[in-house]
Length: 552
Length: 35
Image (cartoon, rainbow over all chains, first blue to last red; front, side, top):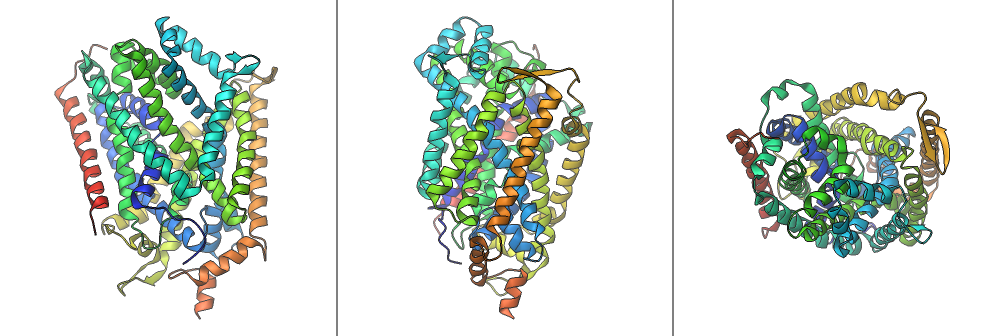
């Protein structure tokens, strides 16, 4: 059980880190739009059902798979699946590569978006944003557009690139300090501040005159919407995306748990913290204030999307209130703390892969991942107008999450869960639940077992199929793009269809390179292969063929 | 735009708040409870 990997310093540290990973723009901007456009207050019914049947169970499964991985000295899916399926199933580690793709694709654009938040926090603090706000909402829109399209410059250098470099360096410095001194410390500082800033905004919004009209848009229930299957799918999708599920992040974070550390309670607490940020902060601030101050209707809010609401509507709305500059700063500070805790969590699985599978030192791992993500980040910066961010978000931030979530649920329920093992108290249990309950301060309630084993995987497969057949298919086949549509990339004009297929070729190349790295790490006699043997011998419970052979 | 906040809306908002605050209180009380 002993290996050289780090552990979390405290239980609250890992809880805040997982919650910090989950709390992001989706809580404050995506949730309110989803709720308001899908039945208002009634949306909370399918949302809470999805939270109970999909979110919490899948989080528990991912934590458990992470604990299993950590026992072997690994933190990502390729190595874990290789061990779970046994060495004869060579494809298993390559199946696990799906678990590393979301972090790779997301980090390419996420750091750029994180840098917008830092820039707007700076502009709020210096009063620049208030000057723009005074010129009206169109000026804010123009200001934001010029910034992200690299038209705002200091000398010859676009300001957006300067902020990207600062943000990129901040993330990597935190990660270079490691799990306990870097990630845990930052989350212990940022998460309480984030929640306090959120509560300040909630109190301010609730004390505005006529706020009832704004809250009506968000919370008045429209029960007829509950008969619409799309509302139920929207709720399931929101729960899935908001909890950082299917990204390999929880898997990686849980791999750093101490032996015999509680898992069930920690996971539930992190999920509850995320729910607090979503329902109370997200459900109170954005839509009500946008409706009563900007006079926006809900269709306009939905059309603006996450970035339009966050970077155009909200600064303008706050700017029109007394102490507008302070409220703008609080808003962007809130988003910044949410952004940094999420960004480092997205990068850590990649560093874990370098450290644990490729056996790189931490410095070499951080340098390698910095180089790759910097190059990838350039595709987001210069390809934003050409749709590269949309493409990365579709594959890394949407489609593959559901695919990998389904894989996790099936592996947990039908591979890890099929073996019987002896637990600490001498009773017999299946390996998956024995691992989940080990050291638990809160035992998994028995009624959750069938939900985890059957309901959650079925829920995920339905979500995957229905998403693919409705929203996913036009995006996968690019049938939503007109044949004559053009995009501009690095000053040249391209057919949007050809450009997007070309960019997909680049992403496919990354997939191939990742699998080459996995094959290299796990080649016969390689460092990862040797590490695996020693890990298994020390494992107290397990079901791989190697364990059985050694014990026999 | 002119819709008034209904009792149903208030009930849904406060019930959701109570549910999530209750879950947080339950969890954090257990986390910080000395063994």
